[in-house]
Image 1 (tube, rainbow, N blue to C red):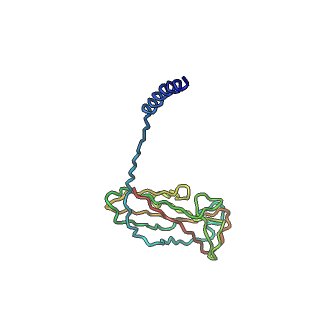
Image 2 (cartoon, helix red, strand yellow):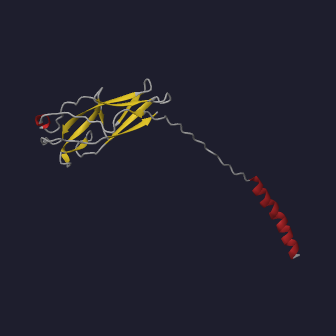
Image 3 (cartoon, helix red, strand yellow):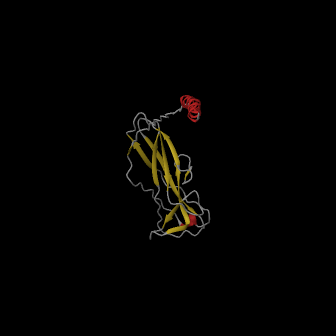
Length: 176
């Protein structure tokens, strides 16, 4: 009789197990993403583009004073494929406390200076290009594009001394 109970229990449990495994269906979804990137253009500019300008110490003698803008500097791109419709130039450089619109400058000895900064802007409308908002977008035309920029000195404290000041600003291009 013991054997018969086990047989009946097995006869009852086996169909339940089989039916539950037959009814279970696992779904798997395959997500395919294809990112098509715009091809790069040829940078016609040298690896380093100087923006030089002269000013009097009186121009930046007061706190929050700005010098006049420099002349324009142009970053030219050519050989853009027809599929590249626009380009973002992203500008970034050393930040400075006291001026979120400018980049830290160094004196002729290579020492970082905190009394002033160098600011970069779009030539057309003087929109400042900063670490926080340094994207400059242009549409390509005739498979080329150009970015025109200008610079000025900004006095943070009013104590900018006569010297030669420099800063390096990196430009990264994103193609669309």
